[in-house]
Image (cartoon, rainbow, N blue to C red; front, side):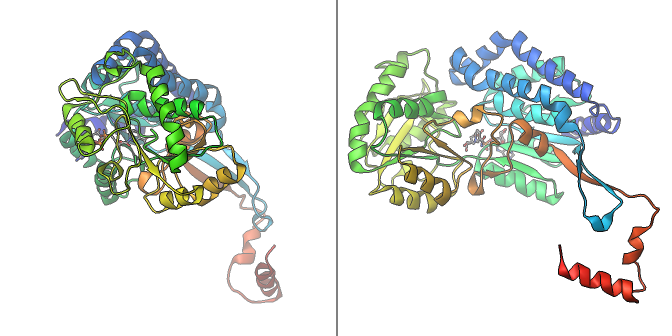
Length: 461
Ligand code: NAD
């Protein structure tokens, strides 16, 4: 029996034994997970530093702190989320009682990427535990140090009957995908998302796919360009650009682009100094292979600033490229690195048409003080999320479901959305046998009462 099979069978036994059902167990697991993060903060920060050169402060803001916030949001709401909700039913069915009762799905699989290797497996895990599931966590093999830390810590803090970590790459994930799960939660690329969805389809297993894409940023001259430039560069350069919701490219008129460029340059130097390679705050690219991929994207372009690459150092300087053609290699795939192309458009309407003509992105950002422009982006473009004035910030709000649409994914999580993703909302109807009001619907379909009922039903309410 493979390790994947053994693990899932053990977790199924745990689930079937009812280990995860009580609110108390869920609460204790969430608290233990929180304790794990707090007690091992230095070790976790070091792993993220090893994997991605992440500064400990950035590690807290974008990884550890986000999971703590998610737990702290879930804990006081757990009772309400778990409660069956009574709903009024049609008079025709009276006397009856209707309820919607959330129930756990069973054994779920959480597959994570390398870019936020802690947060992107633990935040789904918070939802899975809150909803009373058992879970297999499969961290990314490319963020090796974080994977090791998770495999060491999670079984020490959480109930081993219900949570297991399986480490490895494509082969191990392939073995896991041969097992029977009740839900698969995948974060990663569109390509592997397709592999996961295909495997899941064989057993009709529901999936959540948190994918990526090219998230556009539109900016016009109505905003404070210096302030906007700081926000854009912060969102772009976080984790050295390896963020699924990073502003992938900017859309602006040539005049706005010209005015914006010096601000982008200044903002970059404010954030990381004139040589980001010497800044302790600036991250590194996850592997030399990905660094080469980014270097390749820059091979034929003339950056407005930046452009330095060190393959061995896994370093790519903050780089902005102006007047990029839509046919450029920079515009063919998600950049996933600290390179910001600016594509010129004639107007806001043209920017919207540009976005609509491409796969639906995970996020879209708009910097404009013009109400009509903002409203038009809201109603005329489709994206997983839309933020005015602040890239990536919507991820930090558990009140806002986070997820993609179309090519950027399906399903959503964070806060109550996570609880729902990992729950089945069971419809429960409760009707006494007497009086037998359902007789009206029984054959034989003859007589005045039945024809009266027929007419009533056709008239509707
Ligand atoms: P990836 O798809 O290469 O890997 C994700 C996971 O799939 C890893 O755990 C990996 O081990 C596994 N995997 C890789 N190849 C596989 C295969 N052939 N069969 C089965 N499993 C396989 O993604 P990545 O490079 O780790 O992450 C980058 C991508 O993730 C980007 O596209 C980014 O936009 C996206 N992303 C999305 C979000 C989001 O929340 N929507 C967050 C972060 C990253």
